[in-house]
Image 1 (cartoon, helix red, strand yellow):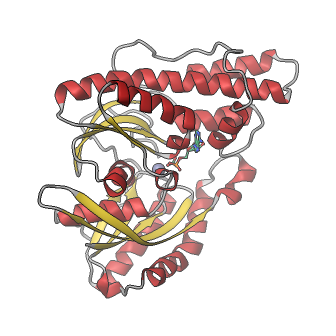
Image 2 (cartoon, rainbow, N blue to C red):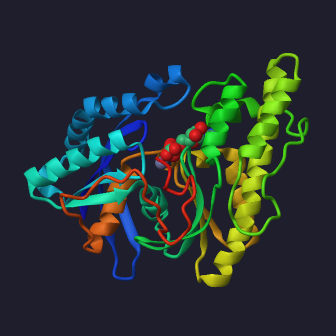
Length: 357
Ligand code: KG4
Ligand code: ZN
């Protein structure tokens, strides 16, 4: 199966060609033939966050060139493709429309089927491409827009164990970074600053720690950081480092508590062997260490795809296309882009669970 994938749901414009097979036993094997990506971060940095209109226009300006580049590098012709997969939601709708329309146009002109991919399913299935992980597995999806714990039962089959009731984890990193004058995107800046900080200087709250369920909350933690900043006469570089370190420790601790509870449910209800992390916040070393420890102590494998495949990319969309095409799951050309598209439609609607535009 050879699939062209297109990703335009946020601030990365990307195209990739991925080749893969799913064995009769469900085992996955794939390889990336080519990829081309353009980050728009420089376009949005002056505004301290992503501006949807700027994002949509940038996708429109660059997507066709990136597709040509990926196809050329792959050494393949359009006729060699088995399908064209594009992110059809959830995400910033202007960008999603650009990717979906381009995917449909290519589908129409090449006669190859179109596959509408849920961006979150792209993140969720990446570990099958990189590590051949078998279903079912437990997934922590932590990005700028999402923060959820899901059991990945199979392609298109998800059970949500928990999600954020307010901010996503990456959003909390970005907002706190702004308070500390660290710029956008906040996660990498906080992690850098935290490296020389004292995580014990500020005793920040661990929201929902010890509470039933696996939901997340970060707004109380964010407020605590803001109050600590306001209580300081000025922000020295050491203050910033200590605030960043204390915030990161609290956030990782809060997430770890939720993950432990999810592991308990997962191991009781499923015969699965892996804890997988995905999304941009998976780049965070402190978080990875905490997850590794939890998995190790509970007899699960810990799987973290390479950083370039944790953040938004088109390889994961092409790979989700491989998995869907294998099951014969293609979509009609009147498929409508979806700003909201939760992976588990039976779970109650919450922000950060594929229901936030
Ligand atoms: O998955 P992603 O690239 O885009 C979304 O779909 O949201 O995730 C971006 C998010 C941003 O909020 C960014 O601050 C966060 O991931 N992030 C990090 C790190 N690198 C990126 N958060 C914490 N630590 C990092 N090293
Ligand atoms: Zn994403």
